[in-house]
Image (cartoon, rainbow, N blue to C red; front, side, top):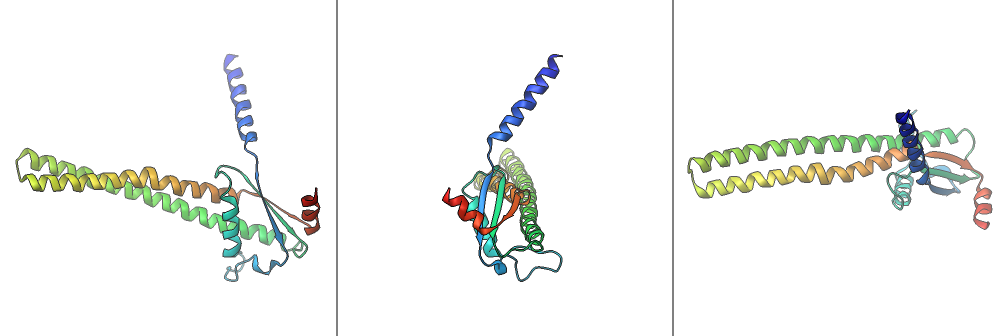
Length: 193
């Protein structure tokens, strides 16, 4: 009985936490839709242009990476047939970017592991040389060599991966964004209020 009460209170807390993070609204006024898609898109796999992607990333940088996104296109030139294509193109572009960021994180994890192994081997060799009294200068060089690799492992795993993880989360927010299309005059009415 007590466990059910705890579970329900945790669920309520999670609901409150999720509802406290408001959606970040990104509004786009599109007067000419000829530059939305990349001219290099593969047939059947549209992606947005680099210029639009840069604009969206710049606007989104003002919000927290964990904040859900809502993208509103205001335009009189986007017809009903183009809306799903533009929706898919935006999601495709950022899903490719998210996949690239995940690969980068995996690479940084692997490099951290390799650097850790090299550092540990270097320290082991340094201790062996030190125990046998084989050259104080060589022992110090091995000590420095090992600690540089261990520091690089820490940097790759704890510092570099965190930045890439933030980018990945941001890209995934674009993939999961609420995308809507509105008439352009609705944007001017909204701004006049």
